[in-house]
Image (tube, rainbow, N blue to C red; front, side, top):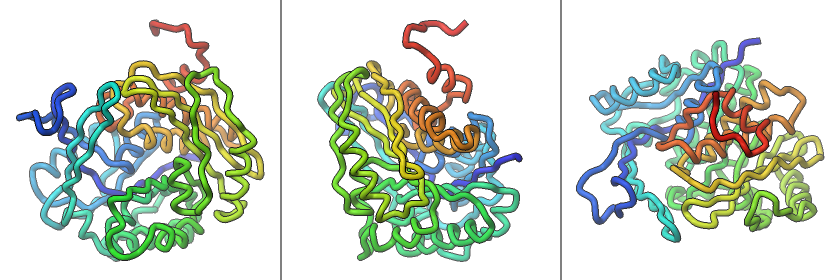
Length: 347
């Protein structure tokens, strides 16, 4: 069976100062494109899966450049709709040592932010598709985007697609008078696979997360506490759902400890822990994990442990790639899954 994954969300133009300059220092920016659901679609295409991205673009040269970029990665774009005035953008300041990264958004009144239910023919979009992926970013922008997302989820489930969600809670969104819990609970009830951090699960389901404090790949963690976290979260989310959890401890800007857990069928599985000692760009790591999760569940049916290992390895490799997109192949991810940590050159 050939799989096709559809993702839905907003593309943003990313503007980044050179090197480690602060936004207040620079007079030039590197321009790239990104966005959670876009990043996921790009990863899936590089893994070799059919991938389609659905959004709303303005009709201008910036949108044309973005379309060309998406198509260059092999992503289907035939169902993108056009209208509105502008593409959203964000400014990204690189982290350095103990200084954290900084993001400034300029996405108000973008073409995507003004999208309304009914603008996208979801039955046409889902022809030949087997999987639909959405995230919590879109519903946090406006009630209209939330309604459009729910419309897509309902039709996807009616047509028998698997539905996954990256919780992707952004506290600076959700300014239209409703909480993430109120808006997302009905959507998540129709969603089969969830991914997020502990704090994001807490926002949606109210369960206190377990702090991840490992300082090395060898350090053990208290799995009993995570077991209780999953039991409580699953009781609220639904026992039929697979729950993926990303765990990251940022020791400094260049040194991260990264792993993940999955809860499925009443059992918890932990992945190998990776020590990332030279972080090139940590933007999009969660999106790479989500794409790896989807690929893993499709290509390792009935083997949640391998699906999780693939997702964590994909997220780990994204830390080595500049920009939002994870430009690695499935073979590279599998090589990391199977490595012992001593390899230095691929020959």
